[in-house]
Image (spheres, rainbow, N blue to C red):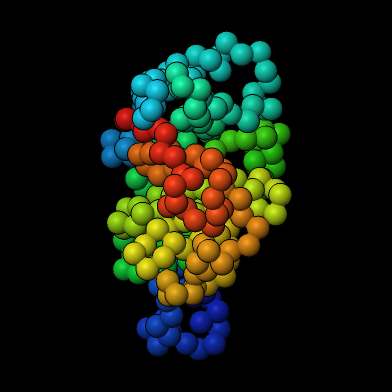
Length: 269
């Protein structure tokens, strides 16, 4: 749709696309191509949420499978529309993993929503953020999913559906950046007192904070804010494809690699 509108605009101005080498136009064409109808294949299965993943505590020696998590959900009496997830403690009473309802209305570990999906190859590290800002529309879960307060989408589902809230945007962005070799993590916490999710990228020259729902175009890493300068963010936990961290809230909230961050859980798929 974006590409079609851009083509129409260029045509109305008497400009052919090859006369107007615009990055947005090129990316919009790739977005359109990535959404071309295709029949399901076995390769699509790699983007499905796992049902047999196991999370292990790095400190207390405790292990928990997603099948057990689903079992706990089925035994609970609460309204699934009000279900905001589970937090799991190990034998040392330390939080080592959390789960949320997925699109299949089953619980999945947070790491499981990162399914190693990238819509297409890009050359520059700022491009995933720009592509997703063009592709994804912000929409609250309760508006999109008939009153459900919390439904998390995988990176694949977010891109294909084309809308979601802050954690859906963050998951899609972090997963793509991880696939490009970046140390990207989804962070959950609060921003100015409100529940929120965002992305941090830890690089040798600093840690950058990426607001995944932002539509502002930034075409250099130097244009992204350093996490140390971002105001109002209070992180509580973060995760990538493999690990889960919690903050003991003792240090600087803008430091995402300091000693206050405890690597407490790991997921095995």
